[in-house]
Image 1 (cartoon, rainbow, N blue to C red):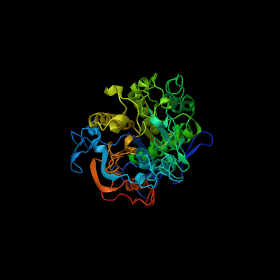
Image 2 (image 1 turned 60 degrees about the horizontal axis):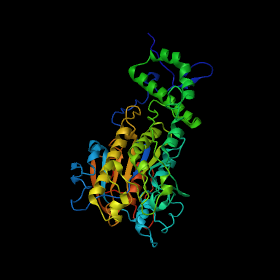
Image 3 (image 1 turned 90 degrees about the horizontal axis):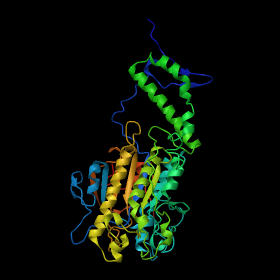
Image 4 (image 1 turned 60 degrees about the vertical axis):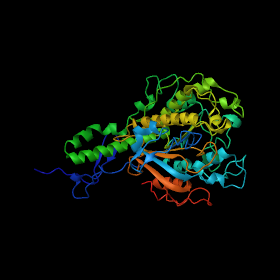
Length: 476
């Protein structure tokens, strides 16, 4: 019996001029066998930043409510972080990082905005009424240039109950977090507009009358559809390993087609891409900040009461914007550094800044607020973990940086900032740890994050700040 053999240059031909080149298969003869991939790590493909105002509660009549206890790899979550306990193995909790960049300027900088501007840029703010100098992008924008090439959006910025207090609904150093080389980037505020932009008409379900994400795209034939019978005939002659290689090859072609289609159409595609459930946000005014007062005395309780629902809706949309591969970089701001809105769902009638220091430091109320933010962070991790990207989750492909603008609410101090990294598959980013960095500039963390994504730079941010990548302890 003549043994079936394929030439290395064999293609599968279909209708018309359709032809698909084959990968190397064992049946083609001698050659290098593919190595087992079972232990391979999932590469980090996406980056997310999540900002909450107000720092941590590390002091007060009832003591430290933020800091874990135990050792690096065997630790107990604090009261504030307890909602994140189900995801403890997916977290890298960082202590001992000082935000020094925002406090070294010769200018008199408002104490919150120095941290707001500096936590992602590592740059020094140039005066109380100005932003940082040009060409000081935030880390998310640096990574957008690397990760979002060929995608519909370089990055997507979202915010909830933003620009309160004295910024009066406008972009200002006290609420600016994301910067490109030209200056600050305003976030998207209207959840209904975000839904319509990324998931189609608000009156047509997930993107069309039939409830699919993209009706037009669904009717287009893949080039693989034209070689179906040819593939079936070839498959019957291949061994198990070769069939697996060929299936993977064709799957990658299908994936490439889908990515190309995403660039050509405003609607997302893919089995992991499903429009989130649309949420009724009636009563929420995304531009409520335009009517705010410097001291937070003007309240919009209707919008405030919708913050939990709007925030979860924003996180659901952010998750699927990533899952649909519309961008690889997203940011979410829970308000701004003033946070002059109320918390009706926590039975707190004063704004966050009042509990931080305007009304004297209130550790009990600040603990309530910070703990609630932890429940929201857990919600995001759960949502991203639920998205199957083909044998692994969206969370496995994504690193999330949770941060804030100050460390200690009553003093505005920025030593021992509460930063948390989350996500990855536990290999590229070694999670399940509580790391004590020893009082070094947080710029070192920013450089280390860039290095994890393949950026080889050795420093980031203002040159006067030590920003050599965090090595001891390492992130990996």
